Length: 354
Image (cartoon, rainbow, N blue to C red):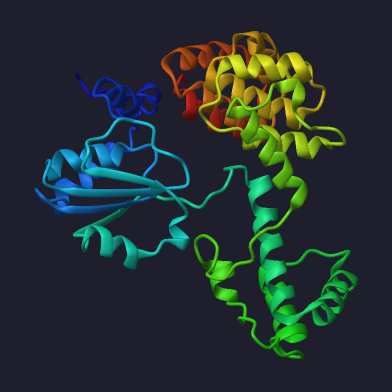
């Protein structure tokens, strides 16, 4: 196939995805590993491979071709790998941060190479992810110094800075002066590593585990519904706020089908929702599973809304399949003139049509 110029944006989205589909790989990230392996010769015949964050399984598919049937391959991820793999490939559902490597080595022997294409477990929506990370950072300070020290510190911060702009350096100076400078870390508590929280990637070691009973209850209902244990109309949703409904939609697994979306729509009329946050997340699901009854509302939403926080995930979900990409381009042709230049730049890259 003749390679067109890089300036042609139509070639920036599809090729790797389409190639992976043609070659029966689970994801286009396979070609990232292939390139690394060709350059550094990571995987040897008969080798032992540990893949951390292995879903959807494309790296394991590539690795087992290189090791052959004599190889030993182990994959770990929070999500179950659902593709068929040879018998010498074992996958486990689990958190790699809590992995007992000594137990794996004891069972499978020492590994020759550890592979990982992991990323922080975020939504990709900065308006949600940044406040969530900041909340955990503040909670880490609270647990380290105790409420008696933390509450006055936080009150003093807002009292002193409520009507002005501040920088990260301003906040760190204040933390150093009002917490670290005046109080000792509680006995048995781990001191907060400010550099790891501010400049590091992912959550630092020992970060607080978020505990929210209301969210956990919502996640349970989402899991039960997705597993077919309860009907949509039997979901225990009494008293749910819009944010809990939003969390419910975000908690549905990626393998939820269009029939299940139809049941939810019949029970809760998501396609007719007047809440932009809920509707936006619902349309992401509709785009992902090709739920046709929501198509008209999806097009209306994309044409009438201009915020990237809503546009980007929907267009990305559409563009994940050839049929959806064609649909996205048709809608975008109508919607693009009404978008801000920044939004146009983002969506241009996703749909590759301009």
